[in-house]
Amino acid sequence: MTKTIETDKPKYYITTPIYYPSANLHIGHTYCTVMADAMARFKRLCGYDVMFLTGTDEHGQKIQRVAAEAGVTPQAYVDRIVSGVKELWATMEISYDDFIRTTEPRHTARVREIFRRLRKAGDIYKGTYEGWYCVQCESYFTDTQLVDGNCPDCGRPVERAKEDSYFFKLSNYQDRLLDLLEREDPPFLAPEARRKEMVAFVKQGLEDLSISRGAFDWGIPVPGEEKQVIYVWLDALTNYVTALGWPSEFSDEADAAACQGDGSAPAAPLFDRYWPADVHLVGKEIVRFHSVIWPALLMSADIPLPKQVLGHGWLLLDGGKISKSRGNIVDPVVLIERYGVDALKYFLLREYTFGQDGQYTNEVMLNRINGDLANDLGNLLSRTCGMAEKYFEGKVARPEEWPQTPDTADLELRSLAVAVAEKAETQMEQFAFNHALDEIWTLVSASNKYIDDTAPWALAKDEKQRGRLEAVLYHLAESLRILSVLIHPFMHHSSEEMRRQLGLLSREQAATGDPDADGVVWADAKTFGIEGAYHMTKGEALFPRIDVEKEIAALETLGAADAKNPV
Ligand code: MSP
Image (cartoon, rainbow, N blue to C red; front, side, top):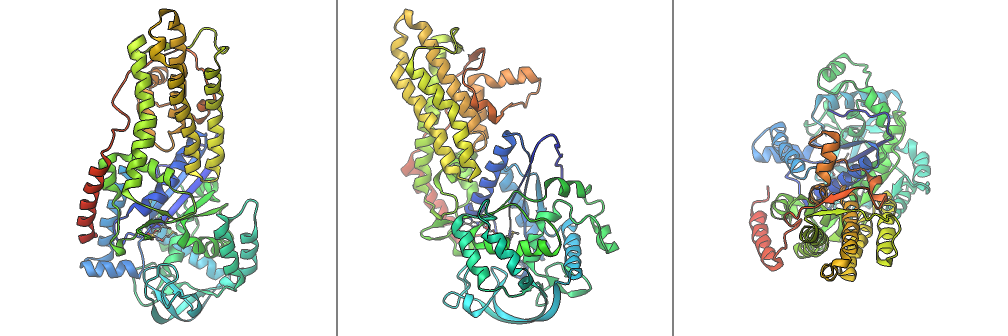
């Protein structure tokens, strides 16, 4: 854990679900992580001290089963998958600050301590549990919860199961949970449809929750009863605080010792600094765990509640949820190799509406890349830098009479450009990534239209218009500079490449002496007309044009090969 606390800034703590390493991750997991990454990067640009947590949820019967099928120990199994997950996030340049694995001692020891605290609070008792169990979701369901006799969350068959178990008195928290979920401004849970669903769920009455299992042993042993393991959802949900080093005091020496020297100290400062989480970003199928069970556990342990749980929709393929077991996976690594990290991130954030399900198709993705990125943004950059080189050897200065200019096209472009950042911010606050990008693309379109309207190639024919021509190119360079800031949270490579071609990178590096300085600050998108001169160099196309039909055929061939060999 290398997170440095920056106390001079406001804090922002965002989490993704910790994913099951039962198989390699697919584009659905990538979708959630990319949203969290974009938000973390956006908040950093806005001056926040961001803590962005992700990780893996490694215990439970499902993992034990798949490991046995693969003929390896559960630990060896998850180690292999988790190294792939970390590689995927490295390839996608996910800017997480910590990655927690639930098999790490810093987590397991703390989960046991949390169990003791819940017991001390009088919320744990021993009983027998009988119900319908879904191995995939690690959940028990009652008769009425089943849908057509199957798991209501994933649709798979369930098993009748009965066992001795410890229970958590979830029913004790019914009233407080209802108050919490009924809160509307700001809502604890959003979007609204999810909130209503959960209010109705809690109103039906909450049953106590079975929180230990004796039927398998791949889990964290219950303190004092080592034949039982702690229910995987209790184990998993607590990652959001154990990663911050909570609790930092132990009533058991062995557990205290297990946390020493594992890199998680100093513990309490992280918790004091970042908790409560600002947002737990989760898929809609696990909203119930995060908005009912998790707050109840926190209430029992006397920990403040997270500020918000946000449930996003699913990516669907041929109408069904993308999942490894359906064999309809889309491998993000393949897409990145072919089109680059930025294109994939852009597509995921631009195409789907937060909270709703959306169809994934290769065709829609490829058309987005071609249309929005290669044509609209890429051409704007290459046309501008190309003209700057052709007419001014790349050097374009701010007009002397700045900021006055009689030309309405200039004024329109300026007033649009300086307003975009705030509009995008408003959308980002709602996690409406697609609308934030829509706002940003209004500037891309307006800038392209500005080129058509001002027709620099015609101005270039008249020596008397040289000043006007330079002013036009300066306006375009400014638009592109602003765009390079605005797209930074979503596509930082393209942002950097734009700044390189505009000649901004070398300027910033020279100013700071730091070769890595990209110097991007969100507020820079709110002024038009920086002083000094641009020195532009036309570089490679930001996004090469794709032959859509050829690529669709190639992806289909690869997809067919994948389906035969799903892990
Ligand atoms: N381990 C639990 C979460 C514990 S959090 C304390 C889990 N893991 S999971 O591997 O199944 O990942 C679930 C999450 O992955 C979803 O909540 C969602 O964020 C993401 N997605 C998995 N498939 C998805 C789609 N097809 N579409 C969109 N997101 C999807 O549940």
